[in-house]
Length: 428
Ligand SMILES: NC(=O)c1ccc[n+]([C@@H]2O[C@H](COP(=O)([O-])OP(=O)(O)OC[C@H]3O[C@@H](n4cnc5c(N)ncnc54)[C@H](O)[C@@H]3O)[C@@H](O)[C@H]2O)c1
Ligand SMILES: O=c1ccn([C@@H]2O[C@H](COP(=O)(O)OP(=O)(O)O[C@H]3O[C@H](CO)[C@@H](O)[C@H](O)[C@H]3O)[C@@H](O)[C@H]2O)c(=O)[nH]1
Image 1 (cartoon, rainbow, N blue to C red):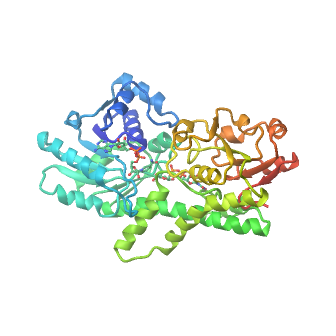
Image 2: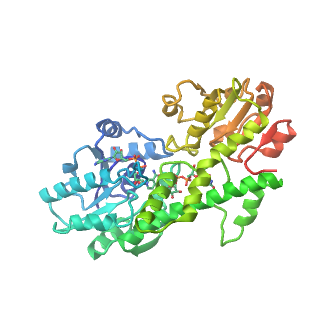
Image 3: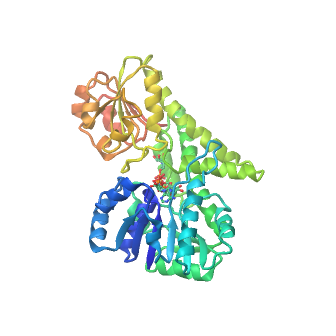
């Protein structure tokens, strides 16, 4: 099928690549010319495992192309909208990019009319799809579909190729059929529903996942006091099929471009309807405090961090991505800097993105070097490069063997046996 994807960020680029891999004829569109030039040369502006390799092959075969001109999409029968929906000052989702994209689609359609589905992959508040449908009501052949995206960064291409489910929200049979044809051969359960239901499924899923994390983080604080081990507790809980093992990892808090903004957007949407989502409100509160709570563990063991050399391992909001949006590392760096610590930081991918924000921090391109002369080391993102380490060499090189494991990913027992003073999140 002829497909156009508006917005070539994490979601748009992954969508474009995955649909082209399935044999569709795909055009990626972005306003940022530099990004398009880079993409046309086969270079991915973002880091996602497998993405750049696939991009190169698809460009060669001609099934994937890029442009800054929406007019080039005149043949497209399906137009995906994958632009950002960032947090506004009041917490609601900022829809200006979505409406700009819709208006571009509208002008394209007026010049080159045909039957088309406008598919919203951006995460938008409940009612947005219906609002857009109302705006486009008098335009023949343009049908609005909600098809929320559930991919995880760091695993984006795999998630797009093998999604957990495909949610299609539309009231138009031809558009539903076109979406079914598009995803033919993808073995995932379909949920065919209204646009509003589809939109709420997306927000509710993210809010629920965030809730699990905050629940475990709060429980971890108690576990630390009780002398129990939250990792063992999570394992025991997760064996109950009603609970399941995923998203029970306590840590330094969730970050990223989705959970923080989507939870506040859902809260604000509820407020607009006179409903208080009290649980979700607390989920956010726990998460905001989690990096501070983690640093308190450090302060309890080091009277004063001023002038102390502190190693920070991992800066991206999660492993296998260069994304630092709402990364807990940023809060940690800010607090340590305020306390007068001398910081040395490592991340395999995200250093160049963090450096301009924290120019006074020292950066290293070798994780083991970060520990040299350090009075304490903090694990913030569990990259394998930050976890699989030569601990004997590290022990000999640190000024003091103090380890704070913000992801419960370092080998606690081995480290304690080796003479480190190890502190995890909610571990005995
Ligand atoms: N990042 C994720 O893991 C993820 C997963 C699921 C859903 N989402 C949702 O998908 C949407 C996109 O997220 P993202 O992380 O890919 O954002 P992003 O910021 O990485 O990319 C958005 C892209 O859209 C482009 N753009 C903006 N306005 C445009 C326009 N009018 N025409 C053409 N291009 C335009 C920008 O230049 C940018 O390249 C958001 O609503 C987000 O909540 C994100
Ligand atoms: O048990 C866990 C699992 C995750 N995290 C943290 O939670 C954040 C988010 O992680 P993850 O969900 O894996 O990454 P995202 O790429 O943000 O993906 C989420 O947000 C996307 C955007 O909406 C959705 O599409 C995905 O389904 C949803 O998982 C990260 O900081 C993780 O470190 C934890 O602290 N504990």
